[in-house]
Amino acid sequence: MYRHLPTRRTFLAGLTASLAAPTVGRASGLQHASGHAFGTTWGISCNDPEAVEASQRGVTALFAEIDKEMSPWRADSTISQFNRNSTGVIASAELSYVTQAGLDLAALSEGAFDPTVGPLVARWGFGPITQGALPDWRGVSLANERLTKNDPDLTLDLCGIAKGRALDRAADLVRALGLGSALIDLGGELRAVGQHPEGRDWRVAIENPLTTQPAGIVLNLPAGFSVATSGVGTQGYGRNGQVWGHIMDPMTAHPVAGKLRSVTVIGTEAMVADGWATALFAAGDHAGPEIARAQDIAAVFLFDTGTGLRRIETGGIAAVLS
Image 1 (cartoon, rainbow, N blue to C red):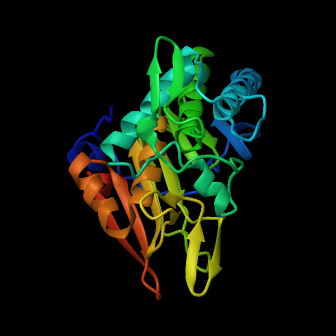
Image 2 (cartoon, one colour):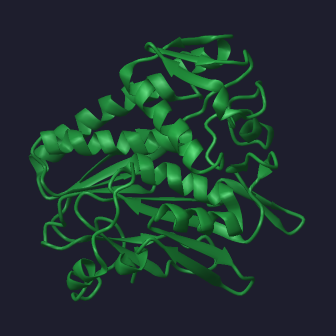
């Protein structure tokens, strides 16, 4: 499910040029489309003004379709219907695909990623699923075009993976419209369609989780690759010297605690990168890097030392970091 990065030698051969400013889309001559979806913003940067207009219309419709099926914030979504129903619902091919990906990731991460964690998220003030059973991803099943559960109170929340899937589908859409070079941004998750118009990799910055310091890590995002970051970010608060975020540790039923502040994952599928970034952050300070090494995931972990940041790199991601 997870395709590895090219070799370090391949990447280093493409990193000899000096870095441009890391802000996405700053290069002159780029055209932009943007909008709102999933409670965040999205944008496309490319050099084709005609295609970008068509992309804006197409992506707006695509994201609305995905939101209608998978948003737990909408009472009329298929996910919300599943959460209210005591047994399950008929699932489309798309919903089945994303749900199965979430269940597979839950198994690979030993439950660090859990798509049934919604009630815990709401309990800590971050999500809409205010009623339901404790997390148990093994209680969700897919068979014969039907999504079922073994506990009538079990709920499903695919927010930790659906945004990445939306980004993958948006990339397919813009390619079908003839865009061979574009960078798509969905709430800070990025996917590169082809290379930058200048003939190089797209260059993007990893947000510094310590807001008092500037972004200091830039990565080169190759054609066909995606990058996703999970962490405390803007969805968090401090209490008694501890920073609490929206990502839950299913083992403790509390927000992830410790010094880990963000995890960035790069891979060929935005859905997979999105899910693994969430899983690795949820796994915490020690288990997160251990799982990443065991699964050979290209990731960078950023920890708050009290005076700055410490980072751990796994899976060959060093080849694309500056």
